[in-house]
Image (cartoon, rainbow, N blue to C red; front, side, top):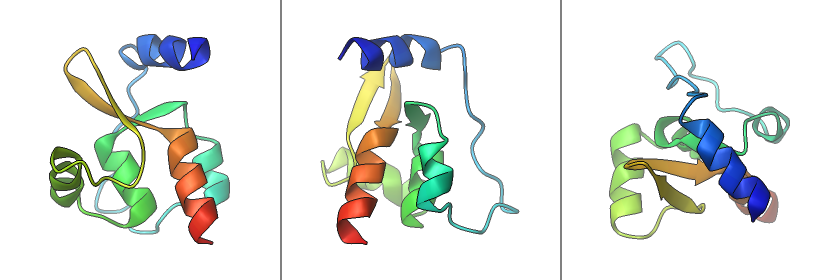
Length: 90
């Protein structure tokens, strides 16, 4: 839990930019394993091939397929939970 809290604190200074239209290819599990401990919602959505807006809808309804936390008014997705969810479905 300490590592997760530290990652959240650092996430406010290390922002991973949202993917652009040129980033069409979905990331592989190996790619995702290289991500920071928490990522923003648009990046997390690429792992599931979801649009950003649909990802936020899923978060609002409590149905996003990975753990979402809030830090400083920002929604962040725990990378380990993405890996666990995708590994279970593989």
